[in-house]
Length: 270
Image 1 (spheres, rainbow, N blue to C red):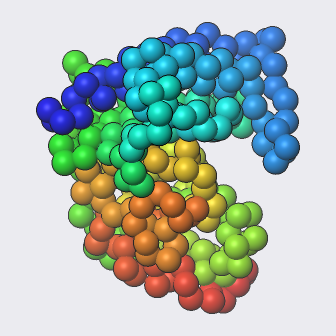
Image 2 (cartoon, rainbow, N blue to C red):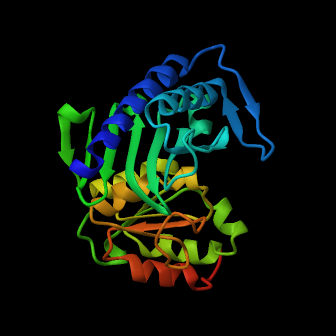
C-alpha cells in the first residue's frame, strides 16, 4: 500500500481525533442541536469534529483541499491541486442526537474525481473500516486488529439480503413501486441506512444497499471500501464514481439485475 500508506495513516489519525470528540459528546445532556437551512440537524459535535480535522489537515496537508459537510470547500494553502479530503464529521446525525449508536465519521481522499482512500469510523460500535485504491479493504477496531473484508457471493435477488435507507426518498424519486417490488422479491430486507448498510455490504453481511439522494461527503469514503472489497458502486444510471447524487452498491453479481429493477415502474403499494 506504499502509494497511499501515509494518507491512510493520516486518515486513522484524523479518525482517532474525531472519535475522541464525538464520543465525549454522545448522549451528553447539554448537546446543542440546531437545524440547517435544509432542515437537517447539526450538533455541536458535528462542527467540533470538522473543525479539528480541518486544523490537522491544514498543518499536515497544506497542498490538499478540503470539503466538509459543515464548512464547505477550503482550497489548499499552497494553491489549487488535484487532491481533496472529503469529510462527513458525523454521518447519521439523527441517530447521534437520539442516542442510537449507528453513526460514523467518514474520511476520504480524492484525486481528481476519484476517491482513492476511504475510512469509516463508528466508535460507538467499536468498529472501523478502511481501504486504499488497489490494496483491498479492511475492518477492525484499529490497524493492529484488522481483517480483510470481501463482499458476498450471492447471485440471485431471491436469495439476497437487501438494504436501503428509507422509503420516503424513493417515493419522492418516483421509484416507490420499484422499491416495493424489490423488497417483496428478496430473501430479506432491512433499512439500516446511512454508512452502515454499505459497510455490511463490504463485509458480505448484506448483498445490496441503495439510496436515492446523496452528497459527495456521504459517499466518497464508502466507494473505495465497497469496491476494494470486491463490490460494485454506481449511481442509479449505472455510472461509476461519486458524482451522480445517488447510490446503488452491490456485491457485483446482483448489480445489473438491481439497476434494471430500480428502473422498472413497479406495481405500487400493497
